[in-house]
Image 1: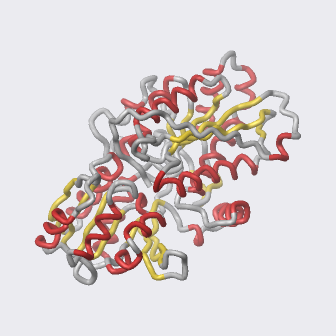
Image 2: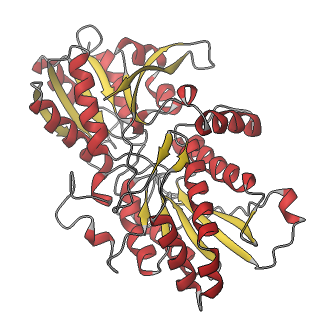
Image 3: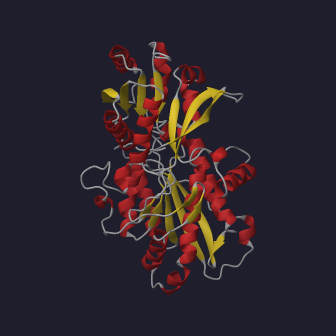
Length: 423
């Protein structure tokens, strides 16, 4: 979702700090004191539902552990990395959040971010402090690997030369390629690619384009849009004139996709003439509200997602899905269960590093012990099955799903419905 754009505007940090220790844990003794897990992602505007869902996921993981691990009480500090001026993630705010975390002598793990552009800011800050960072949602390849990366990536995010950033979700070098193959399987022949000119959106659009060309799909253009403009009809007029039968948009819900989809109908770009496809950054109910169900269904909107749909999960995934609904009384958002997974990975790392934490002379050594433990995570019983981190901090599974917008008896009148496992 994921999640990546760059705003250079310096915004005052809006920090929403919520200490999360389950009630039953407060009565437990914590002979070794307290450790803090920090989270950071947008908690404003269109991101409030997803931000809240991810917060709930981390809370679920901490609650499962009884609020303690290896004799330490766990406290969660939730930070908002959105600018109050724009309501969107901001690099200055994310830097302030990461610096706040590393300056806290009780901080042990950083869970975030949602936007890959924000991760570019915080990963090096945490790296210098030996702090493990686990994302529930970032998928831009260059954060961890050379494939699909810009020059200097990912080494520029590792100033001390080691991996401190981990993601229990597959990266977009996989998702973008799968999306192109799905488009061809659905009968697309000529694609007009749009992107929001941000790290996630441009990155996945480029991967989609490269794969599409390899498999024989014609790419008319890969054009960046100015998502701040309320009128996208000029670019859509070009799409119409091109004869493209599919619009692929790399972006997130905050960067213009709603407008693109809504105005597609206004210029006559609907199925069967033209359909719409996008990546997991668009798998949000808020997008359907903004685009309207009528138009989303008229364009036969489809979205790819890194992982299994919740209702298709088995074992740990199925149990987590049911526990989330029971605890919070609602369906999890797209990345809520991945936030729970990130929380579990953090807690497991702390547990396995317990003896080294005990021997550590300072907080840097404690964090380093946890970072090393997380880096060696193997055969983890996750929501998509068992997985391990590779040398770059990426998971070793590549399960993908495809969703289609369909009419539904919901407050907004439609929903994303699972359609296919993608390869």
